[in-house]
Image (cartoon, rainbow, N blue to C red; front, side, top):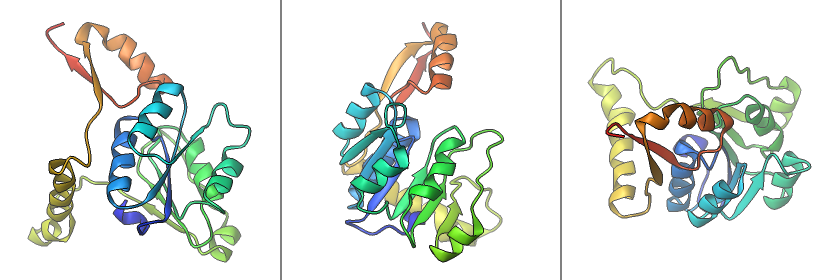
Length: 198
């Protein structure tokens, strides 16, 4: 969220909003005063995102035109698009749906995905494209001060104040193959915790 530069009252679109990382992002965005448009698929994910404070939800499987719908809801496109999805298409769409002078932040790591940006469009619309990777080995003590510890303290403060909660379902370790299938299909809302005693 911080990497996007979005300010309170501005729109942020979150492709992958109903998943493990996404449902947390919906809550952090709300805690930071942003207007959230969740992009994902399925009734369970829609209900979770709206319960967590998403102002709008676009189902990418049932929408006739995701990009147009997002632009209409956000009056010209979100100020930032933070992509947490595990597939390539949302990264392509993010560059098309973000408003002029907006920012696209790549967070998810889909295998072999390429984020192609049209140079003319990127320049004339003054778009910013960033990657955000939370874990990085520390090279010196200043790296810790510059980001990781301060960001962690801020994130934990949101948790301590009850602004962010992890939504999960517990399943037995014996169900791992089914859980993995659901994960590949993108049907898991929130997180799954595996109980190794079952």
